[in-house]
Image 1: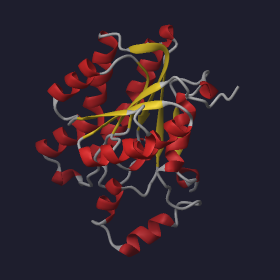
Image 2: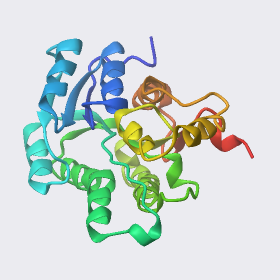
Image 3: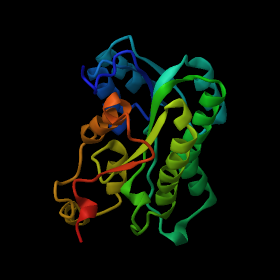
Length: 247
């Protein structure tokens, strides 16, 4: 028996139109599972289904809107796992904080999954023995300049995952986080545009294994979704190519 096999498992994946979310859907399919992909960009979601097969499905939704979150929960049937990969990044030193920026960052990165999990459990649409994986960031663990609002939203995911791990243990539902360092995605490339090439090159040198690729995060997520990790809950798996292990 392959403990990494996801056959018969259906996983809800947010932020599935690109980057880590997209690669996670591909990795789920490779392990025999199926997914419900959630994102705003329909054309990217259609491409994903074309690549992975019609046993999978998608829902176009804006996770900053409560009515869209409610619609997702009303639409889906019972699931065996959730991956929250949706997120936005914006560098802002403290003097540039604004109500608009704080609300936008929090609503996508943190509030959306809190509401989604709340409604899914209320409506009993998650099976016993399921697994929930939240994509946090090393920014939520270490103080990086200009990352305050983003770091707060990602750190909140780590905190709430430990509470949920305790609350959901009675149904054998596990909850864990992964915290990537710099991964080459569409979202991070936009933040990189705000910095000089020299700054980026110097930063990548701090990563013993270099910057990561989305698949290098997706595969550990699949591990946490599978029976191979059946005795792991309330943990935060740092995926950073050795960045935070160096002085």
